Image (cartoon, rainbow, N blue to C red; front, side):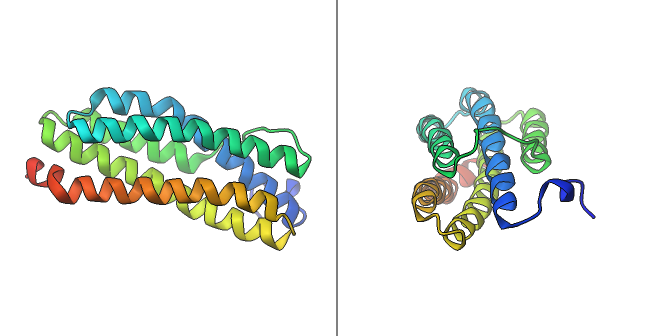
Amino acid sequence: MGIFTKDIHNMNDLFVHTLSDMYYAENQILKALPDMIEKANDNALKNGLENHLAETKNQVKRIEQVFKLHGVDAAGVDCPAIDGILEEADDVVGEVEQQGVLDAALIAAAQAVEHYEIARYGTLIAWAKLLGRNDCASLLQQNLKEEKAADAKLTQLAESHVNRMAA
C-alpha cells in the first residue's frame, strides 16, 4: 500500500490530493522560473519563460479557485516528482558552460516540467468531470491549454534555432 492510502478513500479524496500536488508543483515552478530566465541567453527563450512565469501565477490562482469551488482549503502536498524534475534540471543546467547548449538544456528542462503538468491536468480534468464538477474542469482546462501552448512554443524554439546553435 502507498504512503497516502490512509488519506485517500474515494475519488473525491484522490482528486483533492492530486490538486494539492499540482498546487505545490506550480508554486515550486514559480520559484524555479526566475533562475531559468536569468540563465537563458536566447532572447526568444527568455521572453517565453517570462511569459510563462506570468501564466503560472494565473494558474496558481485558478487552482485556488478550484479548491474554493470544491469546498476545501487550498493547500499543497509535497510532490517528489516535480521536486525531482526541478532538481535534475538544476543539476544539468549547472554543468553547462556553452551558451547555446545551456539554452537547449533549459528548453529540455522546461519541457520535462510541461509534460508533467500536462499529464496531471489531463487527469484532474477527467476526474473533475467524473465528479460532476464541470466548473472545476473548465478552470483546469485553461491551465492545460496554457501548458500545451508553452510546450509547443518550446518545441518551436528548439527546432527553429536553439538546437542548431547548440550543435
